[in-house]
Image 1 (tube, rainbow, N blue to C red):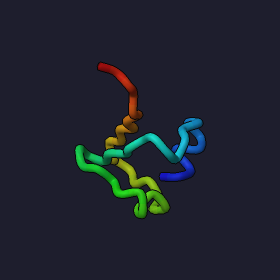
Image 2: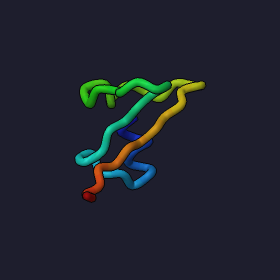
Image 3: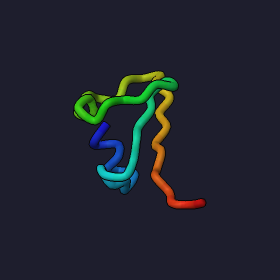
Image 4: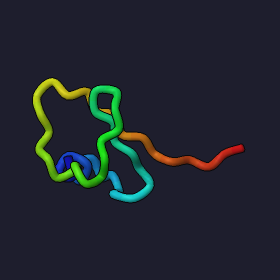
Amino acid sequence: MRGLLAQLGMPERGIAVAVNGGTLARDHWDEPVQRGWVIDVLTAVQGG
């Protein structure tokens, strides 16, 4: 997952990663991406 995030130019801080609708804990980001995964990368934004 870290490799994918790097390819996308995503920072490692200020984001959350979901796989198949569930949050992927940061300590699992070293696992390779599997075929068929639906991945969402969420960024924190400020607002009111």
